Image (cartoon, rainbow, N blue to C red; front, side, top):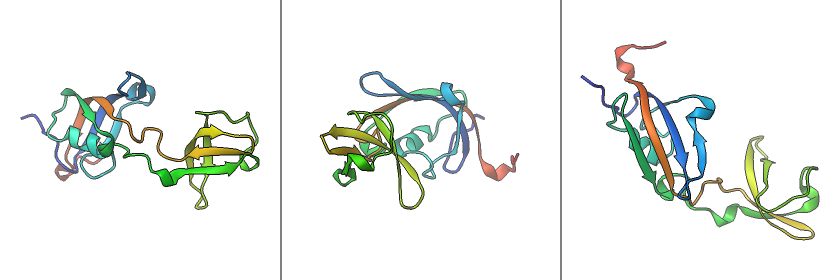
Length: 151
């Protein structure tokens, strides 16, 4: 009996994510297969939904709308900052990525969307916000926890 993935199952998948224009933004080829617990919100909703009912060895390609991926860009996450406040480094340019330190100690990536003489506009939205994502997913392993397959 092939095991169909259910909520809470421990799943290992290989995947490649691409944008509408074919740009590959992420792939398990770069850092090995991805392990997660299905359906519990560790992954973006569309990815979680996609693996439900899949079986080990099965491959599929899913297209996830932005709402089920990283959401639409939030205008409140676009900030103007004085150039002087940026970390010393290369001259800021549009589309350059910076790492911003948050007050709570976390670091998040920010993309420069505009540069003027004295100010830089940073977009703290996820770089994939507002984009539809296509994932090619292959399930390489899956098991439910209740059978005591603990490592």
